[in-house]
Image 1 (cartoon, helix red, strand yellow):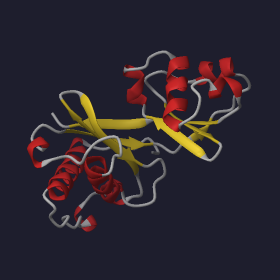
Image 2 (spheres, rainbow, N blue to C red):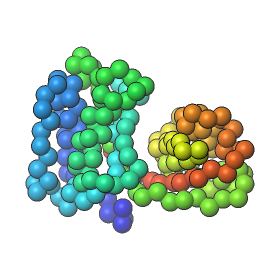
Image 3 (tube, rainbow, N blue to C red):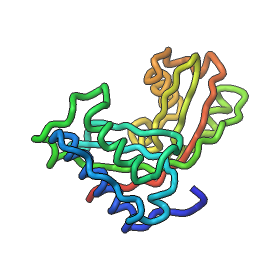
Image 4 (cartoon, rainbow, N blue to C red):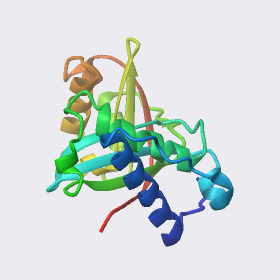
Length: 191
C-alpha cells in the first residue's frame, strides 16, 4: 500500500458505496454506477478488498480478493454485493436484515511469501493480530484475515482451522510444506 492510508472521508465513501450496493442487490435494483472521476486517486487506483457483513457481531457474509485487479471503489462495490448475495455459507441477505447488517471493509497489502523450514519455524514467523494468512496446496487455497486472530489466537489452531477451511486435514500444515503467504489490512467499519 506504499504506506498511503485512506482518509476518514475515503473510508466513509467506501462504506457508502458498499451500503448502497448491498441495498440495491437485496432489492434487486440496478447497481449505481461508481463515477471514478468523482473520487480520490486512492479510490481510483487498483486495490484489493474484503467486505465482511455481520449481524449482532456474528458473521453474515465475507467475500473479497487478495490481488488488486480493478479500482478500489469498484472492488468494494463488487465484494459488498458478493458478501450479501454469493457467500455459499449463508442464504442471501434479506430486506428484513438490511437495517441489522454492519459492514466492515479490509483493504489489503500485496501478499508476501513466507520463507520457512519447519512447522515450528512457520508458527514463529506469523504475527498474531497483524498478518492475514493465505495457504495453498494441491490446487486449493484458503485465507484468514488478520481479524480472525481475535477468535483463534493460537497460531497452531489458526493454521489447522485454515487447513480445514481449505478442505484438507487440519494437520496438513504439519505434514507437508505448504505455500504460505502473509498480508496486512487497513480495516474500518460502520459505526
